[in-house]
Length: 323
Ligand code: ATP
Ligand code: FE2
Image (cartoon, rainbow, N blue to C red; front, top):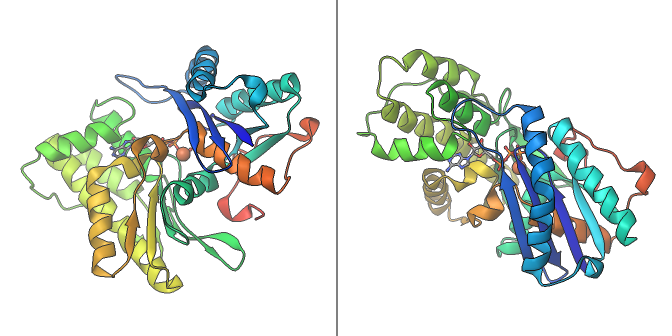
């Protein structure tokens, strides 16, 4: 069985192709970026409309198949930006009708997790999911993916991006902040540290960082931002591991590309005798391959949608997904 997955929850338009053995035959994407300023939904939609044809044909070429070989069409149903989700779901419907193949909409957050289970040896991890809009600690307990901790305001990626925008570093801000943090003298600037139980929040740190832009070097602020935010995320993840008794930590989402977060995660796992699993960057950031793979898992259960019942769910929560 071959699955073609379409990702369009936010800034990335991606097409991935996977087979039932968990082999990724293609993973193509085009990512909206700016030099200054953030992400405007209408502009991102324009970007996706302009890039979908090229991304789709490149993916099919990489896989060495023809569209007629595809057995199931999967798309990101949510959560995400309504404007961009509509583009992916419309393309999925067109392909399903054209190729006369079944269609299935999948949860983007679970796709991040399942691609981690497919491409690493981890079996039953605590999943630290850190992307732009989402920041959640997820684990499978009592027959469902449950959220053990999450951000009370903005996602850690959006927090980093908002700081980067203020500092004139462009979008996405994460890679730039990581680079500048490395150039820091290692001077730690005191920032609020906000963990409440298993949850955390970033709004207060953002306000504080913006105020400090004139007083400190941007390098030292980037360094302090990373040290503080990542320590918060790992404190809550460690608590989730202790609570569930799970011995594996899996990282996922765009922020998981950050080498400092990876290093801190490995150190935490080492200290508790647990294993840390990290994906290649192309599977951490939004991608079509993870949508294709989750589509395949759904297809095995024959969880298809009727084409006239397909829809998007911009606010779909991980713990609402029926296993
Ligand atoms: P979701 O819809 O799951 O919220 P997303 O649209 O935010 O996903 P992702 O590709 O998962 O997309 O994550 C993008 C985020 O990752 C951006 O906020 C970006 O700044 C951040 N990011 C990317 N690389 C790094 C890095 N090296 N360090 C820190 N953050 C990074
Ligand atoms: Fe994502």
